[in-house]
Each structure stands twice: as structure tokens, then as C-alpha cells.
Image 1 (tube, helix red, strand yellow):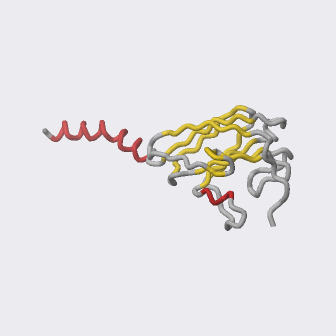
Image 2 (cartoon, helix red, strand yellow):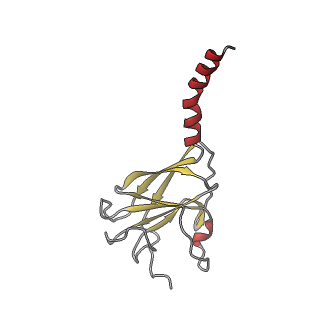
Image 3 (tube, rainbow, N blue to C red):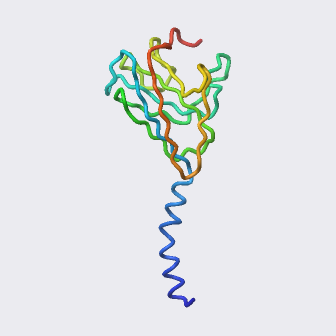
Length: 151
């Protein structure tokens, strides 16, 4: 192959290589349905939280930082997480009944809480694939509410 053809072939592959390097992390799309009695709007949001371990539900576990938090401002909405480097991941949801919580601390008393789970109370792992999008659906209702602040 002559030098000119080689250079043209390399130039043609460059966009594909750049796109590949930008999408090495996985993506997760969470379709959320809130069926509780609260109003969901720009002030009273449902927060979808991404965790790297299921230990966030344990009472005596050390405090954990989430991987990411995405707000949803409607009863039926989508949270999109991009470039996720952990696998598997776990999802929880919390509804803000106060209109003042910004998901930078634990949810306020009265918040509806939920998990992506196959068995009640046990977060289910979501297995991701680098460069690919995984989609899940979750429903949050008022059946489990936060009753007190942690100590």
C-alpha cells in the first residue's frame, strides 16, 4: 500500500478510535415510575441513586458515597447515567416531600424510598457492559418511608 492510501485509511479510522475512547464506560438508563401520592415537579423530585455496593442498605455499614445521583422531575421520567466505570451497580430512589432536599445528605423524614430489587429489601445487581447501554425500569411508591434520621 502506498503512503497516500495508508494515510487516508488512517484518517478514516481516526473518528472511530476517538468515539471508542469516549465510550469506554457503560451507560445506564433508568425508566422511573412514581406511583405515590406526592406531587413530583421541579421542586419535589425523585432522586435516582447509583451505588457500587449493596451495603448502602445495611444499618451498621460505614457511610458510603454514591457513584452518581440524578433527579427526575416528573412521576414518569428517565435518569441517564453515562461513563460508569463500576460493575455491577445498584440503584435506589428517594422522593423529596419537602421540596428543600437536594440529595447531598440522607433523605428527610417522610421520604418514600425504593430499590431496584428482585427480592424485597435486597438491592439487585445491574450488570453493565463497557461501551453499551443497559436499560431498567423501576417503580417507587409510598410503601416504605423514612421514619427517622440516622445518628
